[in-house]
Every structure is written in structure tokens, then in C-alpha cells.
Amino acid sequence: MIAIIDYGMGNLRSVEKGFRKVGVDVCVTDRPEVVEKADAVVLPGVGAFRDCMEGLRRLDVVDAVTEAVRKGKPYLGICLGLQVLFSESEEFGTCRGLDIFGGRVVRFKNHGLKIPHMGWNQVNLKQDNPLFSGIADKSYFYFVHSYYVVPDDGSIVAATTDYGAEFTSAVCRDNIFAVQFHPEKSQKVGLKLLENFGKIVYGG
Image (cartoon, rainbow, N blue to C red; front, side, top):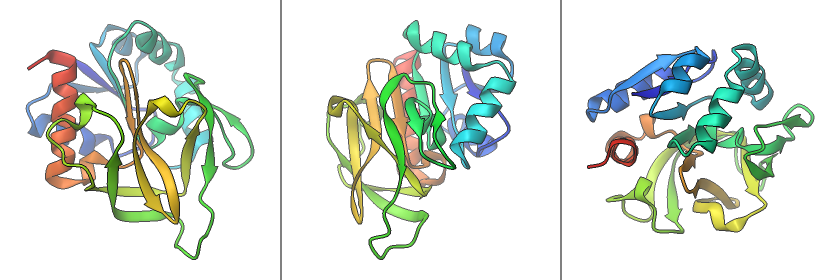
């Protein structure tokens, strides 16, 4: 079973429906003991970084998530679920993240473009990655965000996107997969990504 963590923020039902549509068994939960027993963890989210971290701490699931990652269980972060993997965010003052990856979450510079970055944009693949198996380079995914990650280690960057400047839109290392865009809102190509994560977890 794949645990989708419910900490009070995010498109949980859309993510759940997306997985079920491609035949992947998932369970929405806010209980750390369920996360601990799961085969894999999905952390979706929209909104503010600080609220996300406070929600995870309030439910006492921070240790369950970090321990799952440490044990090598597949992890999929979506939007905020990508950002909280990093050391800190500058959103509403500095806030510490899970610190699984070194790096910061920073706000888009204006560049004459609207913030938040909202709508369809291309994803430029930077590495051979099972999460993107069968997905063409420069495919369009759906984004909604004002902040993006700046990893200390460039080798974890799985994809980038251009919005005024190039930014990291997906990261991958070992069992950790995370994307800035919303696969559950990205129609057929997004469902393919969710299906791929199911294959990473269960084989096939």
C-alpha cells in the first residue's frame, strides 16, 4: 500500500483518484503508524511551506517520513512535497524543512511575468529516470507555485522548466522522486507519471 499523507493541505483526493485510475492501490492517512507500515509514501501539497511543516509536525509524521526515506522506501513529493525535502525556505521568513537534500526554496524574480507561475509549461528532462519512463522530453505539465527549489547538489536535478529563467522542476536520487508540477492535474501525461511511480513501488 502507498500512503498519501493528509496533513490538512493539498489536492489529496485528486491525487488519490489519479493513482486509482491507473490501478495503483493507495491510502490517504494522517497517522504515523500507517506511514511506517506503507510500501511507499506520497506527500502532495499546495500553499505555504511553513504551514506544511507545521502540519507534518502537528500530526507527528515527520519522523515516519524521514525514516521511510532512510529505509529506502519510494517517496514521491508533489509541489510542496518537493520543497519540504530541502533545508529551508525563504517564504514568510526562513523556515526549516526536512533537510533530506541541501538547498533552499526561493521566490521567483518578476522578470515581467506573473507570479504565481500558473498553468501548463514544458518539462526538460535532464536524466534517465524511471519516473519519466514513456514520457517525452519537453512534455507539458500543470504548475501552480510562487517558489522553487535551488539544490546544492546539481546531480539530483531530474528536470528543469523555464519561467523567466531555468528552475528545477523535478529531483531524483535513489528512492526519492519529487516534482514541482501537479501530475494529478496534468491529464494523460500526469497519469503516466503516477503509473510509473506505482511500477517503481510494485514492479511491472
